[in-house]
Image (cartoon, rainbow, N blue to C red):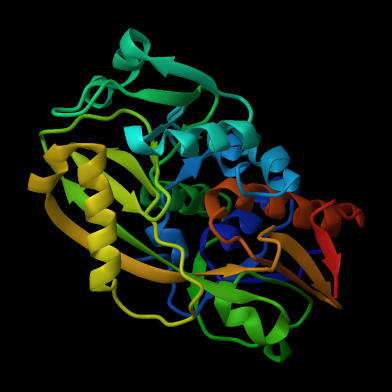
Length: 330
């Protein structure tokens, strides 16, 4: 299997190259725009390695494989093992009860226990004391740093990203297609789900782990990036329209952040972004085999959580001929 070409150098393509290199296979890695930059789902991601939280709406495969993501990522980049918190506003307490019934791996924390985890969330000004679900084993990373670290790990193995735009017929040998929505013409049923995000900077709020605010209309997650920077996401819209963030989405995200903590009202908006997440109907990422092409796609909102699992299964198949449970024949 010396002749393997990976198309697409987002998180899935980079992980495919890394997984192959660990099995002694040095692939060619190409991308039409070169190395990851300020574009694409991999760039705008939250970086939460939170399989149990995702279990509220995801299939068992995501929970099972996602539990290995933190240890996989720790091979190449810094991973923060500080867990996740899920909170609600007082009027939405029923949302937390539903979330708790649909998930596992959590404990309820209030009062001093919540203050010890996140002092700024336990008793926000003008609001009653909060209750939260604490998912202690979950983790998070900084996506843009992770992409750079993964590229550096590949460079040490002699794998660099070539900037080129090639189609399947232009390439000899085995192909691993990791192009996300660009591969939609080859993958019936793949659709785009629009997501939008905002980056804020404030010295008035301190958080050390991802926090999810459950809300019947505008659910929010917020991930600390350090130095007073926070990533807010993310809308989930059944639309394949690209373009900048909309005013409505920005208003909803900022309103939810303000509800989480009033001090976010004075934060600086330092960046906004939007892109299309590729998804199959069941929202489970998969490896789709089409002759000599393996598609690693459908990552939806699970890019950093599930890319290692897809990559390992693709690499294992090319090395041994054995298909994993994430394989689907077309």
